[in-house]
Length: 208
Image (cartoon, rainbow, N blue to C red; front, side):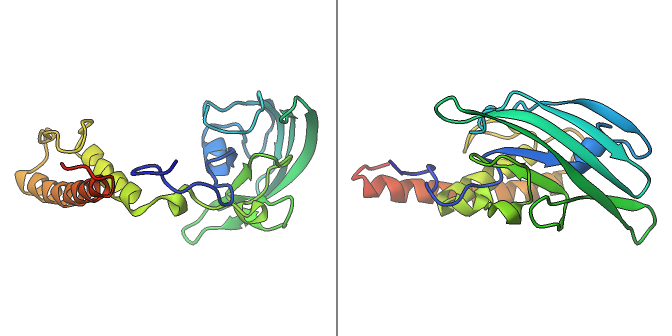
């Protein structure tokens, strides 16, 4: 049942509903290294995903401008059915304006460049967001959800971890003028949150 802060249900899967291969992060963590052949295992700590998979084995074969990776893993579907996936994904680079090269996956389904590939629930292979027709979680957020997200984002920028309306201490080293400007933004965002909460309570016949 929907309500304040519940978000919209249904619709197409989002990029957060499954697993993600983030190429820049994989390169930074040296799972893939240009000029080397590597093997290993990828694991995820995101327990919210609906994809039932233990870990993913990989081989990465990268030269200085192109490469390919092999993925192999077993997916357990609803009902206990298992499926073994074992395939290669091509990589390529493009030159950067200030020098160096940027790496890209080539989507196994569309052949287009992508910095991230996704494995949503029900899929067997990683592919681009467009190939899987995935939306973004923000597209499912209600106006109330977005107001709350903004308020907490502004609070976190000031190092505060409390709830709406809790006091915020000026971060050490921050100028007072900057702090007061940021606090004005927090107050504006939380005013919208409070107004949304009052409006929702009135719909339920409650008074705040």
